[in-house]
Image (cartoon, rainbow, N blue to C red; front, side, top):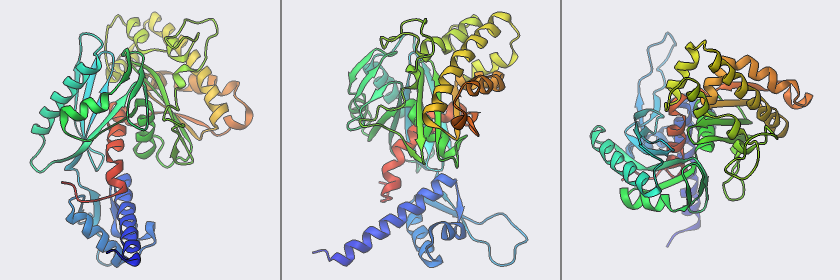
Length: 390
């Protein structure tokens, strides 16, 4: 029979373990003295908590680099990189699978290109086979906690049902359940751009920023995510952040959503690649092409897309009043060649209050952003309840 005091003590201990592991994970390493300062707990309590996490195989301790400071240096605590999450990102031309360590290290990234848009069943089969191959190639002792899926579409928060992934042609697909059955691992899913926002907020261009909006551009369109006062904005059912459907051209083309002139109909990766005469490519390919091109057709397309992107950014500034707007994927590549022009156009007609002090930055995590964001989704349960990993 449990006593009230014992239950309360266990809850405090569990909360403290979660706090310490989360701090170490997000900071990508911290000394015991830093953990003491950050938590307000005493040194002996921190030592006991770190020891328990180390015994569970969740953190490792190392001696810090030599310094001239007097006294014994405090050991550095880092999340154990052998605890991993697998990640999956299905798109119209590929299924990308990765393995990310609890310390934030991307161990592997495999982009499996497809000849056509994959069905949900085909994407599951390809992802499961690649996860199996990855698992066998990782070092002995690697422990997987689950799979995080970055989905280019609407994902219902309660059960992971893909309500709509329009570019993939998926409607009400139980992708999470199918992948879980195929891999035998716990699977969680969310919108890809919202996960990119989470990754950049923790480890990238939005680190330390309270209110941030992230726009992600990929082969499957443009999506967004917002961090408000440090908390991801999800919406009632998890559908918040569909900024790719912001109106930017009232005389534009009809979008697949039924509206006219959405951001993702006017600003797109495929149009940029087509200007180079290239059929397909990832973020890194496009980045290199844009950085070196002086072709007039390419410059005209960049100018056109920058103009419409700036309209969407003006709306974001007025609606969210963010400290920082982060551009990822091909939008980051546009920022790389026209960042000053984007900022100038976006703030020129934004309201005086919201535009003051806003910074528009390129994402820092590059092609790792969705892998890291999806891994954060998979690690969330472990960080909240750091029980021993099987």
